[in-house]
Image (cartoon, rainbow, N blue to C red):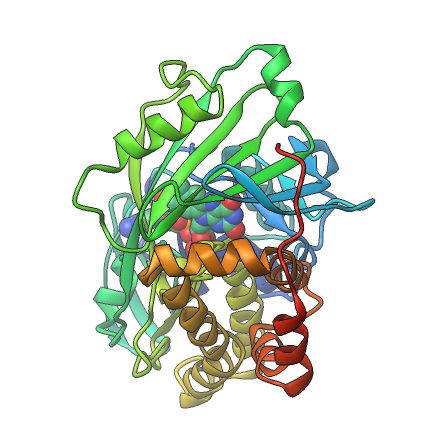
Length: 395
Ligand SMILES: Cc1cc2nc3c(=O)[nH]c(=O)nc-3n(C[C@H](O)[C@H](O)[C@H](O)COP(=O)(O)OP(=O)(O)OC[C@H]3O[C@@H](n4cnc5c(N)ncnc54)[C@H](O)[C@@H]3O)c2cc1C
């Protein structure tokens, strides 16, 4: 269906990932006219582990029970295939989803709240003065007061707005594997994070209802292709590398945003992966995508389109509430990934403490700021020095 040029929306959102759809929902339910542009045909497959931490789940105002593929009560951290931290909780720490179903569901909630979804519609360009924008798409032209780029890493919207937004990316590779029932049972209810599998990165196993998702990421692109590392990891865990349900695809995860980044101007703003704000330790991005959408909704409700207030409010909040956190986490990521031989020894020795404290961040009980304050406090240092690695049963 083509878009008629006479249509005018308060806000045009590019991209119907978690960031775009949650923002569309929040704005539509408070009476804004919103159009959500998506280049793909929904529901669309998205390369992702689909792990939603407790802190991420707390930002979604809907019951997601019917979409849950598995609940991870047990978190296991391993170095060179030896368990160095294991925690089993009565309440799940991470819920597992398939992103095509989750994202489609969120887009449907936005539609139910009054947003208009245009899938198979690619954003091309934007021009015009603040508050009076003309947006070109593959389905025609539309007018909007404000544009929001929720179009993921390397956001075209950010480039079209000319925003100074720089970050690095880490390559990630994920396999969706068909496995026998016995293998499914072996991994059900738990997730694994494995260090020492790839230099400067980690690997993971996330179980789903009928298959296993397993992946690998490298903070820096290794000399070799990621595929041999993933194949070796799968074999070491008794997972058949040949049984992939989908073709393997390398996908970038943003990291290390520049401190000088600006996330908005008078014409629009960027949410989600397009900001470059992702947890640099694990690559968890859905939490920050949802959080930036929430902050954007607050900024848009507060400001008047075309005024500097949306720009200033959004930039300030994003820097204070997300950028500062991810930059703190980035120090940790650098310690962890820059010198793996050293950091793996630290993990082997202090795995219990590090694992438990890091878990507290993903459960939303602690921020990276608080984690740093704890580690650098006399109490934290004394505690760490007293620790010795406790033996764990092998997974
Ligand atoms: C291998 C891998 C595993 C991951 N695992 C996890 C995990 O387990 N947990 C977690 O929290 N995070 C994970 N992430 C990160 C997570 O996938 C992202 O952080 C998250 O998807 C960001 O959401 P978003 O809404 O910003 O963007 P996206 O989900 O990328 O959505 C962007 C949307 O914009 C659309 N789009 C792009 N360009 C245009 C255009 N020009 N016009 C119209 N539409 C457009 C795209 O089709 C897409 O639908 C993983 C990432 C990778 C690569």
